[in-house]
Image (cartoon, rainbow, N blue to C red; front, side, top):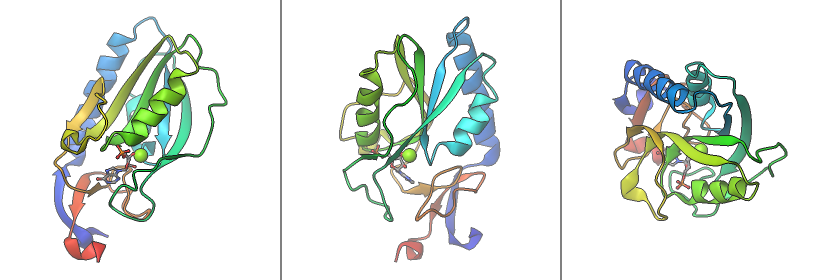
Length: 178
Ligand code: IMP
Ligand code: MG
């Protein structure tokens, strides 16, 4: 697995430091509230696990499943949301937790889905953002890092379901795709 890596872009130390900062920021911003964190599977699993442990508040943790990539490094442009919301978000403070914001297609669809259920507030927290790739105008309220315009894996992000368990974020050698 490590032989497939071209370059480490965000090291484990950088990620852990930034996640702690984000957790502290959310703890402060949501003081006195009990936010609902909605993780978007599968990519969010590691970020949400670490982030939630840095949030010193009562919170609910929920999940939705979305996929647009399939077995590819290029977005299909079509979003599959595999699960309707079967939990209560009405009048709650919702934070959608995502691994990476790319074209914005997935989060635009998910945000609209959650908004239909009338939360009292709705914000987005993404670990990585690739603003250059945006096709729909969506701006996250909380961002871990701005990511270069390159396909990346690790810390939850996959290529063909592999590499999710890397503790850092890295690019892959071109031959991995061929
Ligand atoms: P969007 O709908 O184009 O914004 O795509 C967002 C989703 O595509 C993310 O939740 C990821 O699952 C996936 N994705 C986007 N960029 C990458 C990447 O560089 N590596 C791995 N997955 C990615
Ligand atoms: Mg994802």
